[in-house]
Length: 113
Image (cartoon, rainbow, N blue to C red; front, side, top):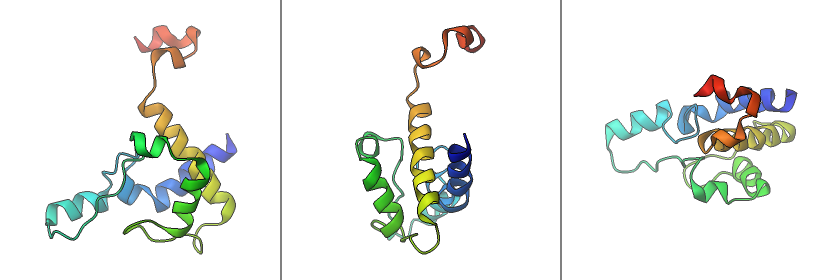
């Protein structure tokens, strides 16, 4: 629980502005850049899309550390343990985006329906 809370906190500080609260790539910076339509903006990845789901945890860690496309490197800003916490939180975002009723404990399913 502590790792996930730390990952959520660090994700909200460093990642959500571009990737959005749910990881869909629709953060404030991404929306503003899209509205300007200057043609040089590379949209942030949808972290819940299949291409990211298929990446190993180490690759996500490496991307956070060294950047990719227009995303900067965060290795000097985010400590190693916090980068791993962000990876764990991204996995939780992915799971929630693709959740099924079977993922919910049987005792809680009636509350959702």
